[in-house]
Length: 259
Image 1 (cartoon, rainbow, N blue to C red):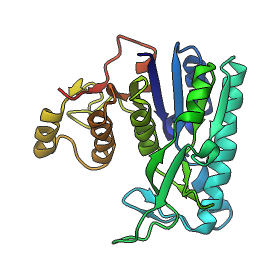
Image 2 (image 1 turned 90 degrees about the horizontal axis):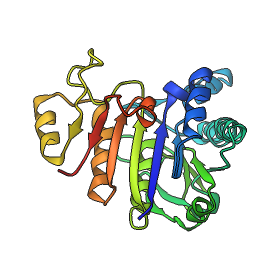
Image 3 (image 1 turned 90 degrees about the vertical axis):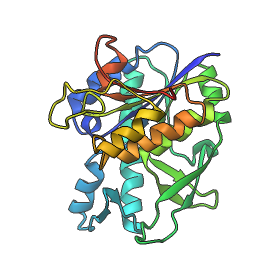
């Protein structure tokens, strides 16, 4: 079974022009099939502020009204997506930029209103891998932004970590999928203030212990929940760490496995 790497990058790379250029240069050299998923960084917030559109957050998640969705679509599927695609083409990495609406690849439902009305935020219900698979078989790298659709004409702002996880799950039946979450830390840390305190392996068993101890808490919990959701659905392995983990085998990072 062929390997497929799904790699998610966030604001620490997107918001830094030098870091983005350096990452994409190395990413383009990765052998084999790969998919890149990117978040939106700070650019959407900066544009909203310029346009006097209020930015509303709840538990770190963006509340997405109609005006905010317009900005997110322009920034995520436009400026950031096409910048990444152009930079990869310059590195001879043939690439196509996607939202979930393109090729009907990722279908979501609008998040139901409970304690918070998140507006036009989508929860993934289906990934259609056929179009993306055609590209992979022709050595073309798909690049996904954090936007999906509801199959009824509505775009939806969707968490990029979740998109990466759901893509990895969808391809697990036909590829040996590996999911990489790149962020500013070296991995999941025993001590949040010590970047050298990397927990190198987290399993289903010791994850619960680490949560009970309070070692893993707050913003790391939803990221790890996505990781274990992927592992439970036949993704081969999930890794969390600095982007350099993809290119430097000596670097410490966190690997999530079933056992």
